[in-house]
Image (cartoon, rainbow over all chains, first blue to last red; front, top):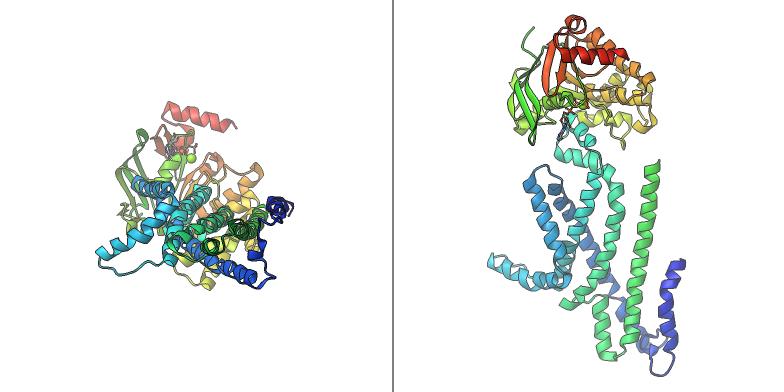
Length: 253
Length: 246
Ligand SMILES: Nc1ncnc2c1ncn2[C@@H]1O[C@H](COP(=O)(O)OP(=O)(O)OP(=O)(O)O)[C@@H](O)[C@H]1O
Ligand SMILES: [Mg+2]
């Protein structure tokens, strides 16, 4: 809690400075009619930011596991597949990847005779999920590798196949090493979702940009924007800490 | 005796360039008990692990019940249903109860109903003399109890052959005998067993055949009477005198 207050302090100072006539908080003052309309306009981006992030996270969690498994293989070929994917995806900056997915991918699809347009909503989700999956894959890999080899050998000797071994023996044990860092990755997605504004997705950042253009009050509007992300991220990290405590408690039991 | 339960003919294995098994020839008849001993690093675990395909051999033939092991998944599946394994470190599933440890294989791999699997599990828990610990987690049991649960877990798959890789080496001395007692009673019931162990008292009591390994080779094998009284090779004699001192 103390930490939160400290983080907000610089912003409060800024707000204090701005009481002089050159600063105009009226633009987002909920007590005035236009101010309230503006605030509602900005805050209503929250829904899309959260929706994009959640869907991207769900896809990334599934995709990450799919990418991690070949990385755990004893066969070199499979491990190379994993390494190439992770290194490649990890080294592409998000914005170029977003452009590639949004403007490039539909062309590939068309050339294959598939007619799926990619709208900003799904363009953003695909990019975020792709980009994040390299990190979730590494989280899975580390978590699964932390489980002793004897566990999968024992599972094999009682007749379980590869997927049953993962499902019933390895993942249930690895989950406490995997879940907290996975939840942490969600913060990455939420922050990176701001890039969706560039391809026209009306989430938090896009709305702030649009309002700045009409109102020309960047300081006030972007201050609110920063606060919106801050609140989101603080809520998630409180969740992560709760999860870490729970998993830790489980482990000690 | 009908055909051999296990047959290894000219088996060679390398870890990269390291020649870990050299021309292993070993025959285990149905119902026979074979005890393997030898110095650390001699390849005992590797022999046992090749028999149930936890390791691949590169040369030679391994047959189980007359059927040759290949790398095709069907063959691996077949082995797993006929060969049980007990590990030095127990390798129980820590996130499952004792009962669930025992029923996981029968339910998921054999398609038994939960009811049948639990009935079978309770039967074998009784067999290893811990009928009243079914609902505990492995961590709540002593080492000796954990190893007996591990034995029961193997028995629940109703294997034709049981492999033991130093089943008592990780145990406190006072718990060794409770595990050996269970193994002796399994032996008396006619189970085919391959046991890597340095418990020579146990070996004398149950072994039909002793195998001594050194540096990846089977240096000597034969009935325990000969093995303990007049070992042929110098290496075996030295080894025996060392471990029988304790
Ligand atoms: N996965 C592996 N990769 C490379 N070398 C290995 C591997 N497993 C075992 N070895 C080596 O093979 C040799 C035989 O190992 P093995 O475990 O079969 O010996 P052991 O007779 O069971 O010894 P111990 O009494 O210590 O258990 C050892 O030198 C060991 O270092
Ligand atoms: Mg060994």
